[in-house]
Length: 215
Image (cartoon, rainbow, N blue to C red):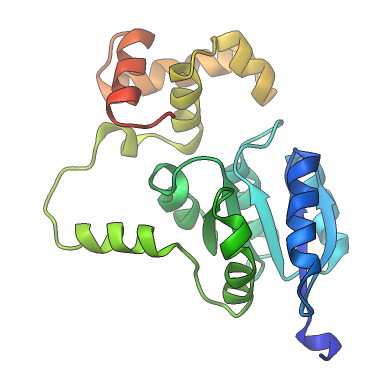
């Protein structure tokens, strides 16, 4: 295996046990090496520059900012970097948003043990990666003339706020978790309620449960 053929990977995930698990999976390959890691979005943006990586594994739920925000910032700086989003969420919740934001692929953490290596090799080669299940779901909707659901009109941050409120978190808790002001989160909440034509958090939570936006 030549040096040029080795794929350098950067891992950005706030859970140390997840990072270690990913590294163990990749340690069994000869053509993939971990060139760096970060536990939050700020460090991911700063440290990946020094890693010389071709692929980044990026958790969509970072503690200081959303993974999609980090993705957009990184792609502005290094458009050619292949970013593979990792998430605990089902693919239909965040995959399309991630791909539209510039991700090369989307992988649930549940499927990572069996799909990670294949996904990395595929995006490193300039291709996109989605699971067979998501590909089938997208194919089923091709040509359908249906109106997009209200939550598809939300910005990434508004959508994130929706799912967190529906999961039982208060505006204050969300503000702390996302390192935002209570006022900013309240504005996101107000905007998404208007866009979705809902009156309050109870209706929002009912909508999220009905549309399976939360576990």
